[in-house]
Length: 189
Ligand SMILES: CC(C)(COP(=O)(O)OP(=O)(O)OC[C@H]1O[C@@H](n2cnc3c(N)ncnc32)[C@H](O)[C@@H]1OP(=O)(O)O)[C@@H](O)C(=O)NCCC(=O)NCCS
Image (cartoon, rainbow, N blue to C red; front, side, top):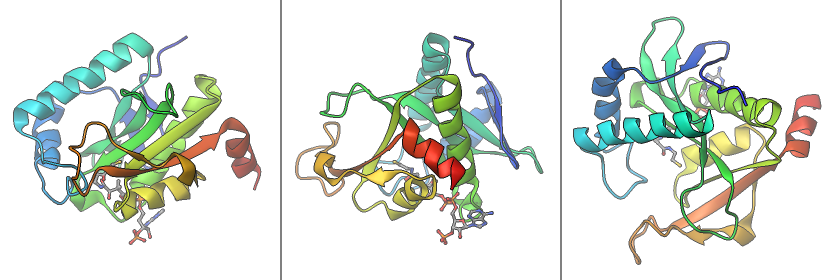
């Protein structure tokens, strides 16, 4: 399969990571507001390591979390993309869709726009049958993105995230899904 190195949406370029993305990426991942639904903000070293893992995922599988760049300003604003679920769960193996944007770029529809584009790539180019997404129960902004791109809550598969300590308020997670068929119906609606 041809690797999907770049995607375009109306206002965004979804591209491979560059070394000079690190300062803006590390700043975003160190922002307590951006990371309020994760146990901890990330250090610069953790952000650099995450870019390395994202590059590795692209190298191995030909898709991943694309770096997002605004077409109007060229600014790096975060990531959106697809990844293989990295822990055991009743709904895995599966491909998940996820996003993280710097705070100054919230509220413009960029996450939903990029997510819609990534979903299309997953179904049309990768030939996936289903894509899942999950987040901490309290993370309403992220669930709004899931709903905006036509995903549906699967309450029966809500779960305790194995990488969040037991008893932590962010451990309960909700699961959303969309099948290829549901996506095709959304296109026609
Ligand atoms: C989750 C996250 C990406 C959502 O960002 P967002 O900007 O709110 O999401 P969208 O791109 O869908 O934008 C929707 C908002 O833009 C507004 N908007 C403005 N112009 C718009 C347009 N052209 N199209 C769509 N929405 C638009 C919408 O009204 C909506 O605002 P509201 O939330 O006040 O109702 C962001 O909150 C984030 O990065 N959070 C931290 C990381 C995180 O939690 N990631 C998920 C972990 S699983």
